[in-house]
Length: 145
Image (cartoon, rainbow, N blue to C red; front, side):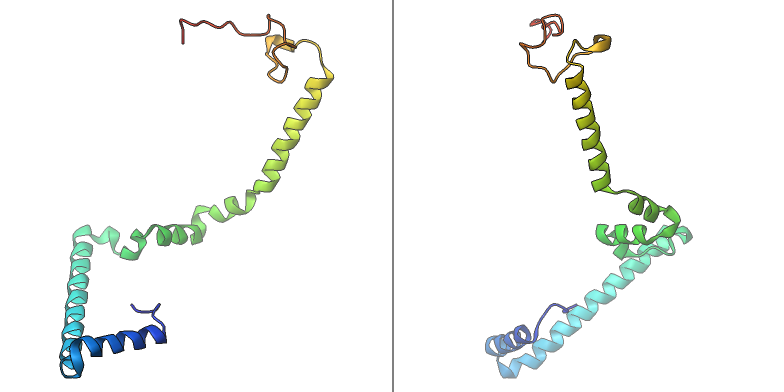
């Protein structure tokens, strides 16, 4: 529960508690705090048991920690039945980007080597408007927009 409190912080809390409550009342305050924490834990455990019993036998392995999205995703990624390991290992973003870059460069080289009109009625978007004739441009209809 208090895993992230260091020794200096713990000493600071103790000194502040002694100053605020005084050495006479401090043991009673500590007892009250521990009793309250114990009651909260008992209430929490009973609520969890009630929820598990209401969910039924199909959710007997249900853990409330799985409701944390990070825990759920980590648990699902570690599950070998889904085959996600193969998908994760088979996907190389750098390789995919290199292939796309190469395809675009190849297309640009082909377009520049065939500097004639575009074939098949396709519009060459790499040409500047003055290079492309009026026939290559789509008709603009101001009423349609």
